[in-house]
Length: 489
Image (cartoon, rainbow, N blue to C red; front, top):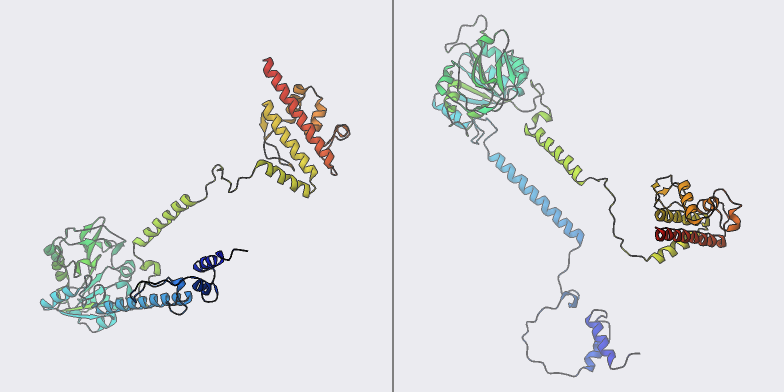
């Protein structure tokens, strides 16, 4: 038992460490009664707050449950996503339209071109229905600009060709091969041409007056077919042309229009008409010249996803051109990452053991395992294999790999015939005796003459001890013979 004088101090230390509760343990009362009263200097009311572990229950801040904190985080993320979506929706609504829209003031819109056309006395109308624009237009005094012509229905394109035959101008912005084939134009479409600022190199008055224009970078056209001589190709970029004018066949029985026969104008890249590039080079002059032949300009932008569109595009077709290249780069990066982080079949690396065990303890533990399993035959095989390994190393014999068997140590061994002959020559003992001792199952000198086959069951502990003595004696004899040879040499 502790002395009476030290017990309060011990309890005080436990109370300070939190081992005992100040509220329930009577040690605090004992300490207060045992301590003499001391006068304390006057202190202000504002004290340093106690640590959290010394505060009374209910006086500190309550910690939120982990599930409540998780719910708060999820709610905050959802509110942030809703705010972002609302902001994007407001920004999209504040925008005046889509790409190439004459009512859009965005960089990819065409409001500036529409205002220039109105300043030149041309009435500009915008619609999403191509059939409506064809039916309500005067064929002799209208220019129809069709953006995204692959979205237009095939029947509407037939009406558009009939309208061009009556004297109207049809400007197709970035048409594809399906649109050209549907209209029957003597033109082939090149998938992509280099970008640049080419010169006209043609006799088209509008192109000659405009000069160099920022064209290229997208589709190109080549004249083909029996009517290729009638096609006017301008602004060559690479092996194709960025602007092509094809005269429309005149409708029989229809008088010629005052402004001349109708025509199809194929533009490979409509970027020179946008608000962002209209003031570059001769972009504005070319755009006004192509669209200023008639007093009415009908700008048609078909809706996306029409069921009877000429060229219905899949999801892959809607992806940008750089997406396949980006996927290829990601694939190569994944292959490099797999080669870098993959498993390499190199040489084995020694790993330090977490605990160092003494050799004597290891031998004793392994022996106890053999004893618990009654595996005397296996223990004898291990002793023989170990002895053969020592003798092979001592005699300097070559080793070779051999099939594994019970008791094998996993190390390559020498040829049995060579090992037995070398040991017999070094010790002077009979090769048959050494063979039975190193490879047979005899456990004593009496059993060596009787046992000449594989290991048998039922070996006693005395026989196993006798085998150890015999193997040890054989090893000493070989060592002594080696020492004599060294001394004689």
